[in-house]
Each structure stands twice: as C-alpha cells, then as structure tokens.
Image (cartoon, rainbow, N blue to C red; front, side, top):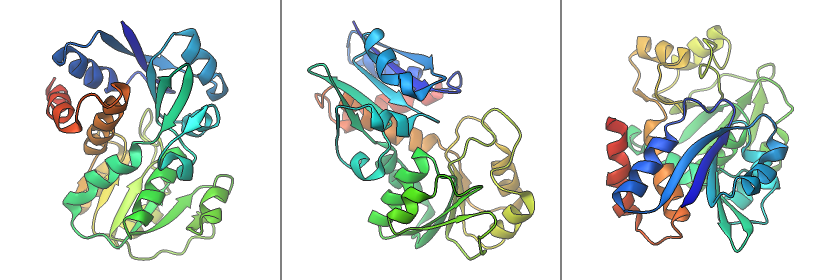
Length: 263
C-alpha cells in the first residue's frame, strides 16, 4: 500500500485525507492518505523518507522549506520557490506547486480581474502572485513586516508593509495569511480592512471550511466572496493526478474528489 500525507502546522483541520482517500477508493488504488503535524519545516525530508511515503502535500508554514529540500523542482514551483506537492520518483523527491493553477480556476467566477491585493507573504502568496501576473492581473502584496517581501521585490512586484502601504482600488482582495484559521484574528488592522473593502469588487480567503473573521467582515459589506474550497478542490485534483503518475486524467479525478466535499 502506498502512503501519502499532508505536512503542516496546524493540520488537524485538513480535508485533504478525505479528498484523496475518496479518489483512491473509487479508483481501486491501494493507498492511504494521512495527516502529519510538522513543527520544524527543516525536518520535512527526513520525516518523508522515515515514513516511507510515496507523496505528500505541504501546507502552511512549510512550503518554502519543502522547496529547499527537493532533489528536483518542476513547473511554476521553480519560479515561485515554494512547493505544495511532493512525489517520490526513483528515490528522489520531486516538487511541484498546484496552488497557482488551483487559484486561477477558483477566481473565474469573479469575472474579469485586472488587479488584486494579496494579504500575506508566505508560500501561498508567492504562488498566487506569480499566477496572477502570468494571467495578466497586477498583484500587490501587503504584509505586516518587510522580512518576507524580498522575494516579491526581486520579482519586480509591488510589495508593501502596513507602514508604507498606500490604499488603492482593487478588483479582488485575497487573504493568504493564517489569521482566523485557529484564532479570531483579522489579517490586517480592522480600520485598514474596512477602507479596503469599500474600494474593492470582491474578496477571497484561502482558508476553507470555516467562517473566518475576514469573511465575516466581507459578508456585512455584501461584496461577492468565497472561501478556499474551490481552490482546495482544484489544487487537490492536480496533486492527485501527480501522485498517480498521471495515469488518470484530471477530468476523471475531479468529479470523484468533488463528492468528498458532500461528506
């Protein structure tokens, strides 16, 4: 039996085991997908091989650490320098990023988007900023401090801290921070959020499965919004496709995995 897992901290909320195990069962594949809480991202590679894994997903806050520990990185993950999907090939750890394509699929329902404000500067923010730029959407990154902005600036992107940010008008505001995942925090100060929500057309929180404080504030405004469920499904389908070494088309995997959202 092949074993897969999701690495993260926290990870107890993850729907990934249900999503992937539903596909494995439906396709008659001898495989099991579990959760692994990982406190130190630097231990990811060692734990991967110690557990005898065939593949894994990586969630916050370890996507950049995963990138650094791969034997080879493929596709858009090379540009993003953050990995959310790992596959074992000939005892080598191969890294991919399915967040970017998953996100672009999820925002289609918002209609035309010309620019977007990304809250946070972690691995997910990296993926979304590059995906948006490739989709000819101008991203701006807003983070509490400057510590993680170097990557975005090196990519020629507009990146600001709370202190040097000038409010503008945006088609979409995207929360990529973990604020609200296991607490009642907002990703940015409430006064700034209220000003931004008065000058945007829609919002998305990559957190899924719960109404975060960010989403509650958006609901009051009557703006179009969504949580991260659509992105989760789209990236999960792509990850499963890679786990199974592309033996099954994504159009076969997608309806099976979507059913798991009804459980």
